[in-house]
Image: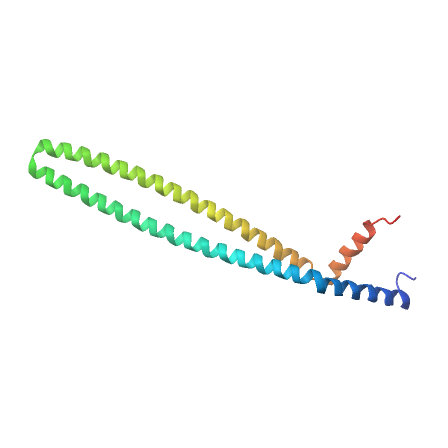
Amino acid sequence: MELITPSFGLIFWMLIGFGILFFILAKFAWPIITNGIASRNKKIADQLEEAAKIHEEMESLNKKHEEMMVQAKAERDAVLAEARKVSEEMYENAKLKASAESQAMIEDAKKTIYYEKMKAITDAKNAIANFSIDIAQKVLTEELKDREKQEAIVEKWMDDIHFN
């Protein structure tokens, strides 16, 4: 029956112990925890800003690539038009040269696109990993908000401790 209705002395000492624990946590642990969370939030915000900048740079590179493709096609057409005017022989030579150059430019552009794509995928994976950590942190915070769950965890830990 003592387990169901504890005595006044037990309640008194439990309150004293809880008060001391609360004071120690409030004085030493909580400022460290809140500073850690604040620095983590700042780091995540900085990483998000960096990812946005990288995304903007990637869009800029894509636009430049498209402009270069348009310019290369225009140059190729100009070379072909001039080659037609000069002669049939020069036309064939210019056509082969322009084709080879455009293939090289296309290959270079494909390589550039591939490397940028891999960079974007890596950045996205890093961002997903950071978001996963944030979600896990928030889930743990939500799980430990309930006082009954906290007390159950503390009681389980106390039962696991074996005193001599």
